[in-house]
Length: 393
Image 1: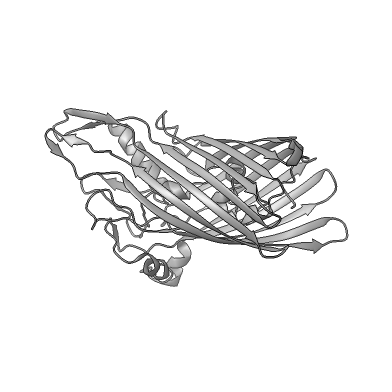
Image 2 (image 1 turned 120 degrees about the vertical axis):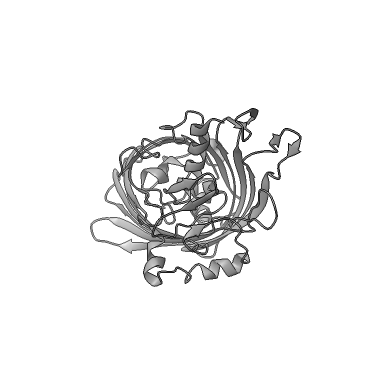
């Protein structure tokens, strides 16, 4: 087996799920000395797919809406200004370790009335080709592990300040196919399940003497769904149910200069494991979500450690070019992902381009030099569109 490739794929999933720890391939368990890192199935669901949010520190609960809001806070699309909005994003994943892992994301939003908007998105995570072997090292067959998710969202404005949304998600995770060992068929199989998101978005104008501004608040509870299993039904892994709360302040100083400052905090709604992390969690979904707020062995202080913080800024000049920066912080006992991000955005008529670059605090980190590219297309009736206002709505 291509050990480097397999470990890279495993490490990629673990990092995406807030894990950067010792991996024991013999027992298929993850242990972190002195801490209880939370792991789940399908951790790719937590990875921000688009470059705008990635450039601002991987946040987006309360920033202005675009086609990629379906991931961060679906209720934002109720306030989107365009009749049609489309987004396409691509990111090579763990390119420091391997050269054929990548994440792709396609999204579309359509306004169907003055107060109602619908959206769909498709996420695809390709882990590249792997060569499987038996215990003696004899090659069995090659396989391409991959995961795919399809989302459908309906968003409703309740007023000129408040909106809500619901999202249904179908999840397909195929990590090993049906690999055979001579004449014996393994119990491994692809996993399929569904999940829902519920979200809220609120924005309000602020009065300043020298400039215009607004303030926004966003809430998204995502990936509420049945656990996934890749073999026996008794061995299940929770989906990465997640609570995200964020706020953003937008200022328009004049017709050329706009600034957004944003802050997100998020927390996995998954029970904290005891010392050793294994699969086979059996608490009902809703029970596990409520349990996650008070089950950490270290009490309230450890619950706080499970929170992830992100802060970011976005500056627009003449609605044509944007500069972005941000910082992402995770407690060292709960995954230790800490990195800065930089981003660039360009807009011209109906087209947009965004780029993001990740700079980890640690040297030789697998996420070092992660880049993301995004294209946006915004269309109004008559195919006419002014440059989109990414700061103010």
